[in-house]
Image 1: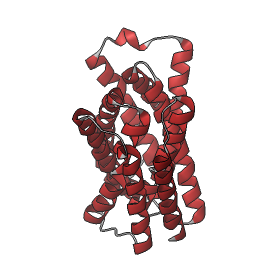
Image 2: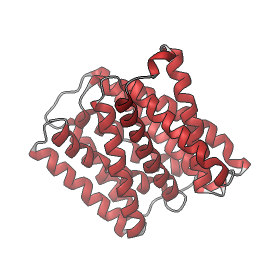
Image 3: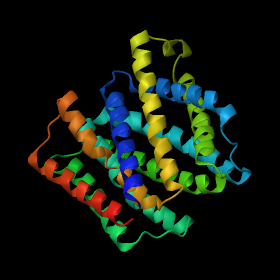
Image 4: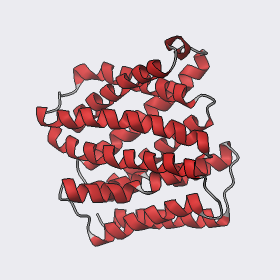
Length: 278
């Protein structure tokens, strides 16, 4: 992966960590996630007339990805009920680069080069240490966090394949995120009263801003997967746990020990190897 593309994906990682911190810090995370998705759907609806329609071959992937993202939303919200950002976020994200690499190998016959593979292993290893070192994790927390990671791996591989079939990374991103965004309020209404979606202006603006950050972050990742190996791109995206750990420390007052700082350095080393491999 080129240095330029690596830097762009790292910017996406910062955006990704930011909206996850916003979600974790909220009082009603299902509501926050739903408003985020509604803002994503509205933004994509405005862009639809100006982007190409994805090729027919990619629409199965668009549909599957929208459903997987909906499952991811529900698991992520439940995960953040169980533990702090610095613990649950790394568990959810840590396994996904390896899952994406395995899925890309099986379904897209895509194998990363040795240096990239080492980088992926370092990133995943460092992320897991961030979550586990010196702390016990409740089984219920583990189930939802790992379930979230499985959804991440599944939709990442689906989108990596779909964007290559679509003929347009921008068109694919817009139509997939529109489909995903429209499912969120439907899911919310099935679980709660639709009237509770309307709240204070500041609350809604803040959550909507997180949704737009999420859209930009994942749009960058889809663009990168259209041009590079899925596993390394996923690993670079998951360096967002480093930024999440820092955000959790500064804004949510979560503990950041020396061992966790060392783990962040391991993740950074893996990221540099991935970038250098390009």
